[in-house]
Structure formats: C-alpha cells, structure tokens
Length: 237
Image 1: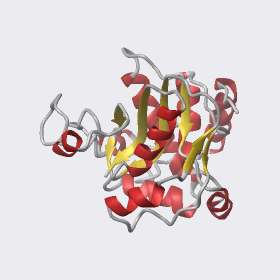
Image 2 (image 1 turned 90 degrees about the vertical axis):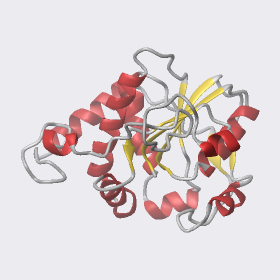
Image 3 (image 1 turned 45 degrees about the vertical axis):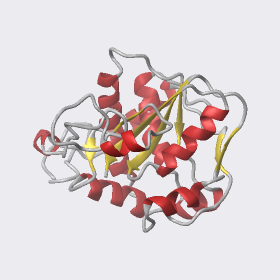
C-alpha cells in the first residue's frame, strides 16, 4: 500500500486542529509541532555520528567507527538526528509503550524535517519501508511505532510508503534485554520481502541500538534486488 502525500497532509491538519498548543515537555505555549523553541534547542543532537552506523563520536569524521571497520554493516548508512537519552528516550517510551501517539507524531515531524534537510542535496530513496511488527505483536500493541514515524516522513518527502511487502514472518522475543550476538540469532529468518525491491530504499525504525534488526532487513532487501539501503530512525543508542 502506497501512502500519498495528500493523505499525510490531511492527517497533519487534523492533529494540528486537535492539539491544544502546549509543549509536550515543559507545558509552555508551542507551535503546531508540539514543542517550544527552548525545548527543541535542548534536544540531544547527534552532532558527530559515524558515517555508517551513526554511533555518536567525539569529533566529526569521515572514517567509520572501529566496529563498522571490523564488521561492515550490510546497509549503506544510518541517519539518526538525536542520541537516545533524556528527553528523547522519555518521548519514545511514552509513545511506544504507553500508546501516547502525540509524542510519536512530534518525533515524526522532527525526523521528517531533519530528513528533508539531509536529502536536499543528495539522492532520495524510491521507497520507504517501516520495520514491521509480527501480527501478534501489533495486535497486542495496537499500532506499529515504525509506521507512525514513517507516515509523516513519506508525506513531507513525497516518497512512496510501502506497508505490505516487507513482513516479519516469525515472532521473536523482545530485543531490549538481549546482547548483540543474541539479537542477531533472534532475528535470523524473521523477515521476508515480496517481489522485487527498488535499488534505493530506506528502512524506518524508532531507535538504532545494535543494528541487528536493520542488518537482517538489509540482507533480505539486498536478496530482493536492493543496492543501497539506508536506515532512518529518531535516535541512536
């Protein structure tokens, strides 16, 4: 299913009309983005990311971090504008585990704005793919957080959003408490892609931690025909 920019604009307008105009973090008057200027400026920006995995580094560099040099990832790059610490972690937790979609929509708007700037002078993907949940997990949670983040990005960037071809075909335990090696084992064979994949695609998720999920999906997409797989997420742990 392709998500059109017109539908995204309708969703945005509705939420803006319903929003009372207060900052989600401090309660002061805010713009339609639901965050005041002061709180927005204080968000923990990922100023010096690894050019491959977006790991926060002490200084700007064009050289990949030691982990990426030792074990090159199957994706081309990660775009993660913030570091997973306060208040980003609080916003994501309230969104993901407490179903407070207003927090998710704020983060999605900010991510979409960041990506628009990033892609202004570079080629854009031909398709956006939110990381899928297993159907049982999505029924339990009631929504897919990656899809809620991807919708505004697709609308803002004018890129088709595909929700029916990338599948999580095997239910897996929660990744949160697992180490990197256990995460990789946990995800083997967990995803599939139906049909031929465009050459340049972007995967959207909420947080990039060890990269196990993104790496497994990237391998699946490469087997389906992708050549350049980017990962877009709100924050880098």
